[in-house]
Image (cartoon, rainbow, N blue to C red; front, side):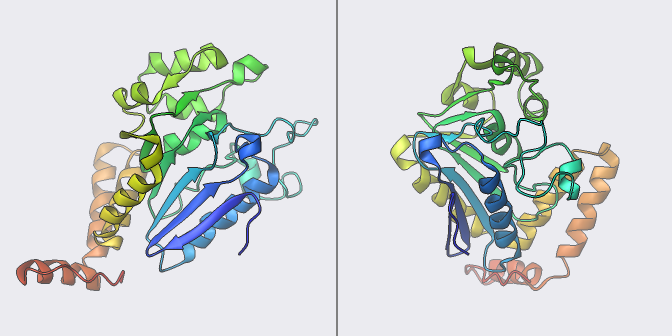
Amino acid sequence: MPFDTIGYEVDGHTATITLNRPDALNALSPHMITELRAAYAEAENDDKVWLLVVTGNGRAFCTGADVKAIPGDGKVLNERPYLSSYEQWEAPQEGTPPFRSMTKPILVAVNGICCGAGLDWVTTGDIVIASDKATFFDPHVSIGLVAGREVVRLARVLPRTVALRMALMGKHERMSAQRAYELGMVTEVVEHERLLERAHEIGDILNSNAPLAVRGTRLAIIKGLDVPLHEAEMLAESFRERVTRTEDALEGPKAFVEKRTPDWQCR
């Protein structure tokens, strides 16, 4: 389907979503959030797509909610009627991919300024890389708002004291891409001009692996983080058992013995 505020392109087994409101620094409007929801669903439901890449157009990745579009009545930023859907009763997710319920991995390529709700992609993405021009901060307290789920998630990605410093300093302190890499918030820093190229290089490597095994591994890790260790181990083993019943689970060892590249069927 055509989109107004984002780009959506499928190349091979990779769907690339590009935040495309560069004049607004890719701030999230209600319409943009609606389009992102549709794009995530389209990618998740397309059997040809094995991986999502999310990046931004312009000098920002995403600067959070568009303050010009925030309702004055305090209602959740959304195009649908207030409290008409389950997601509006949950913590606001804005642009966050539905990472808890989707199966396909998300590779985030941070191209520039990333703050506020833009940090959600960094803390929920499966693989995160950044341009050497990227910067990270959370401005909520500087504009009179409590820093909510964004920094709660940050505190599970960064050391507690670093997350607190970022949250409490607000717009007055920015983290560089290199510092984010040193702290493990991103996994690689790339020359700005090569960011998307590198994202697709990584994507091609990921897509060379068995797609169902990738999804099962991803789910085992993500679901396991929310439960005690023994339950997480049992859950991971249940995903392993399910995948052993697939054609790809037979193809992998067969290709290894025959010394050839596996022909994954995603079934």
